[in-house]
Image (cartoon, rainbow, N blue to C red):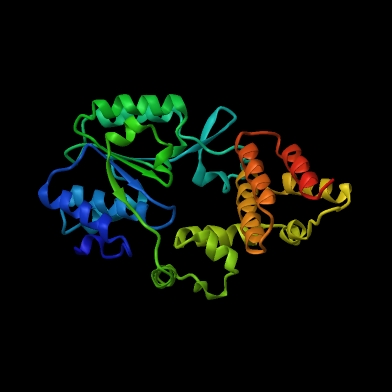
Length: 316
């Protein structure tokens, strides 16, 4: 491994493929960085682009500009929410206090911007470069527009980052060189957390470690989600017993829908499923929670979806 990728831990195969492209000077028009969230895909994209722009020896100035997002030949695109006619990047939604009632998307207008950016003349590099985060979050129209761009890539370079590449169009995947990323071992997880100045995972609840599944970024998000839960809400879910009072189940559904946004509800549902599985809950209960997950993702009214599910699970 060259010094360029020395801070990317546990991704030997991905680094080997990226280094081979740089050494041979044979870059694919598009790459698909596929693997779990939070295991270094974003860092790998930054280091790879640094290698594209400055060579394997790297360049501190270019590294800083890429990380700050102010390189003139780089366009970094992430899913957005729509708010009052404006597109709000997912990373800014919480900071702006945006109500996140639906999942963010990569939208048609964003992909059109990508196509225009890739077709323009680069300022400093040989060609413009674009990174699409959470590429599986593309709406259908956006995916079709991206496919047209991939069919005529020009001199630009496109990197797609996806945790669930199977959700992308097969024709999109076939036009990208896939770079696989894997989960980290517990030892590697601890090292990455230490480098980030974060506490070691030894004190985390076991469910959080299992949900993170070898992803440092995933564990940090789990910690944040766990800390943000209203006091006692998770315990009320676990204490929901068969033959519970209907008002108890309905009150819990109300509090879940009112206190948590869409992403928080889905995260808590995943935690609840895991907690019930660890308690050896009946398969029918776990299947009912999976149906609830599908309903929440399909934008069914959250409170109604929770009410029906909790009443059924309580045997009412």
